[in-house]
Length: 218
Length: 250
Image (cartoon, rainbow over all chains, first blue to last red; front, side, top):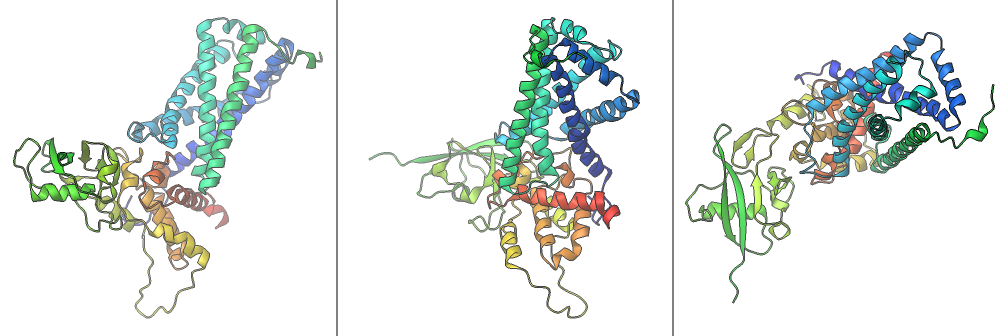
């Protein structure tokens, strides 16, 4: 910091952008993604209908790059930069917040690596036209399955903690009581996303469709 | 009759910032209500190590001995705290004393916390009351603001919040929780609020409030129980409103 008052630094805006993109659009996209993929819990036909609707949206490349790929890439790359500027000290100070600080960095990296691989296998290799059948066949590979589970848990955890961080860092929850409540909200988000994500994986792996009776063919 | 109880102290010694560090052990006679500073005084009276070697008194900062001056913060058994309130009877032995790691070392346990005082100057952590003429009385401070401000005014600039913060390190010039909390204190005062914008702008420069990553160690380590995380959240809110909405709303 300079000795006189200055205009906000670029790092200030980049930090705020990093924090914001984590919730919007990245977090929101994760919610949308889990919601759409939950169609597998109805049946394969419903899943393919939902996929087709998403795969045929207008302006698709612009939406994919502008709303999904670029924000994620920025959030991930700048997140790694933030990690490198911190120096974790959980062993000396094992408080909960400090654990979350450290875990947030590790889960972020796992999620980033997982999402890169996930995009490659389910978006790139399928030319953006993946179907229930392609995902199902991928899920038969035990290593794929394991990576899916790890990636889902890391992403869900990262989003839950991220929402807590976001609410604190933008001053939307300030008092200790409000921050505790925000923490509980983060736990609920993390747990719900984990459960839904794992249910989707089970659905593909075991051809399990608990909501099959909902289906009305087009 | 039982042998007199002994207190074993391990002190990290270093003659200067560029000198090599070494550990020295001391065995002291136990006394009731002994604290870490008493131990250092006893060593100064008789600077002989546990194995009988003569050495020099240990350099350390301390003054008030009642958690008011903020000068005796150090690492005690690996944790940042005030030496004056670290009671020997509550500590595991041997008691390890080390200088704080986030500030430049002067000698032994004494560190230079100038960084914090410079940061306080950068954010104008004061209320300007002097002019070239009599400025008269300022506005009254409501009891509500007084009540919120009092705990914040207890900050003793000890540096424990910086020491425990993972974001304060050699890669990063983060000013730390104490300074952000002082910005909140002075911005909350009706006269101090006249410099609110300048303080927030200073806190959005390099090493400013954006470096906080919400590990929240500061609030646990603060010996004065200052609601530091609440201060950071509030100042964060004021800062982004000014930076991101200032051009829009004025």
